[in-house]
Every structure is written in C-alpha cells, then in structure tokens.
Image (cartoon, rainbow, N blue to C red; front, side):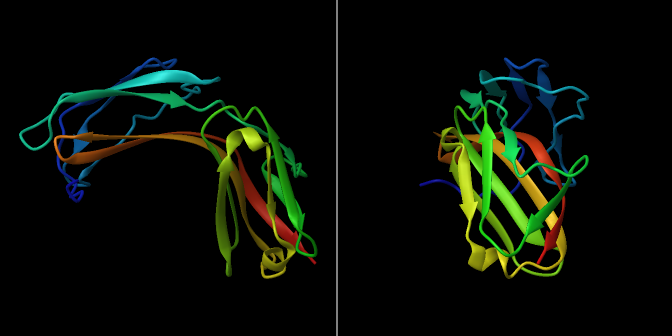
Length: 178
C-alpha cells in the first residue's frame, strides 16, 4: 500500500513545459518543497507540464506529466472594483465563468466570522450555484475566489505522489448584503 506522508526528501523536483521551467529544492526545516516566486503566469492556456523527481534514499526517482488547466474567467458575479465583490445573502449565488476546458473549478466563499464553503465542479460546466439557505448564513464580509485546478496522482515504489496545477484568476474580498 501507499506510505503515509511524513515530509521526506525526494531529491530535486524540476517542472518543465511551462512558460518558465522551475526547480524546487527541499526545505528541511519546513519538511516541504516550495516554488520560487514568479512574476508572470507560468501558463496562459492548457498545456502539459512534466515533473521530474531525482529521488533520494527514501523516494525513488520518477517522472510524470500533468495538464495545467486552462485559466477561467469569472463572468458573474462581477466585482464592483478591483477584487471587491458585493454579493446578496437573500438569494442563491450563481457563479459563471468562461474558459473552463479541463480540471475542476473550485469556488471558495465564506464569512470572516462564520460559515465557509468550497465547492468543486468540472471546469467545463461553466457554472456553479450556492443555495440561498447557505447564503443566508453568511456574515457581512468575507472572501470570494474561483480557481481552476488539475490533479495528477502516481504510485511510485509504494509512495502515492500527488501534484496539483492551480490557476487562480479571481479572488478578493466580499461584502454580503441582506
């Protein structure tokens, strides 16, 4: 069976096939890998990325491919200003987008002091609705975001590896009105 993750070192991770190639090194104190900061999008349309892991004494070397998802553009709700949304608590919230080709679209919505929800659907659907019963429970302010994600898993020598490519294009603060 698959081993339980414990923050082990797997060598160097290299990701190619995107606008910029990335090399991720293990951070021993955090027991994790971190992506270097980039100032431009790594992809602007669906494309295949290749992940190469050099391996270590604990984790075998391997490579795998992952389709980075086409970024989506939210068409509703429309922000009132840059990354600021006003959303009614009195009705269901219908979120729509374009550009969904592959992967999943995930809506994250919640109050600063109250309920929070993350809903995912196939990105190609182009729509997701949050029921009025949930909307009514929200406080007066919080967060709103929608992202596209593709996930790849691979079993390598008893290790279950998971890689996610995420395109976050819409996120911001929300004011929830009665």
